[in-house]
Amino acid sequence: KYLYFKETGTPIPSDKPIDGSHIDWIRMGTTVATNALLERKGERMALLINKGFKDLLFIGNQARPKIFDLEIITPEVLYEEVVEVDCRVIPALPGRCELQTRGDNIHHYKKWQPIRGTTQEDLLICKDLDSEQLKEDLIKLKSKGIESIAVVLAHSYTFQDHELQVGDIAKSLGFKHVSLSHQVMPMVRIVPRGFTACADAYLTPHIKKYVQGFASGFKDSLKGINVLFMQSDGGLTPMDV
Image (tube, rainbow, N blue to C red; front, side, top):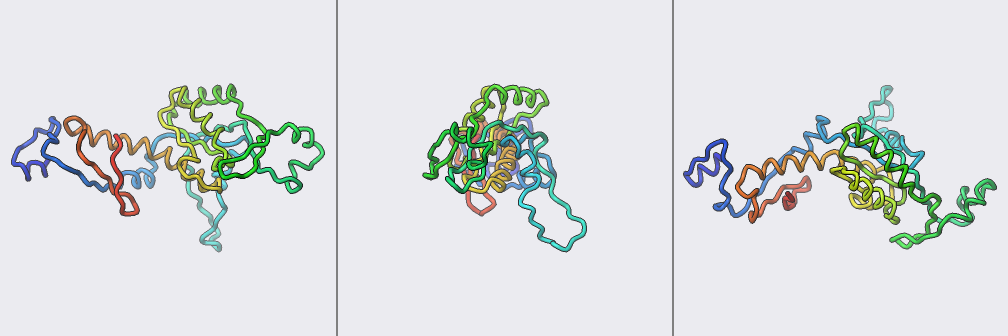
């Protein structure tokens, strides 16, 4: 409002929105996401990951930059809760996968559904998504006040169906933000993909609130005005209110 008054000479009361008719564009840089991450003031969120992998992101890649330190301090995880999703997809590796050759698995192996991923890799669906159990788990999760989730399933970079199904169920139950790892970062390695999806679920709702608050200070919420935010790489991205 100070800049508007300085340029136009028209004072604006503190309780009135700014008239954007004199504004052609806005370029803005902010550290709101960085601050929220460093201060741990992002959105409360939960991690949804394959059954049996609940500790995967806590373990991480076990990198030790300071290998001779006697006291290892690991960063806190961003999620509050973990929901194990009962589904499983594995690469089809005939003769090379122990799951397919062990005697107690041969019967199940014959029932596994072969499928080809988007990267043209041959896969096997060992266990399809248990939708009813997932709904029960998500209802319990929502009752704890968590509205944002990150969905991180193995091999979703090439087989997205299960993550999409989980996302649809979560949205139907009223979760406000759903980060699917294959959409946030479609890469092979599940750990960095999972870290990125969690960061998205943790920070995006916080950023949206900030952007909406900024836009509410203008008449018509900045409609028709070209608003660009600076990114960490120095580029610009349009504001999506």
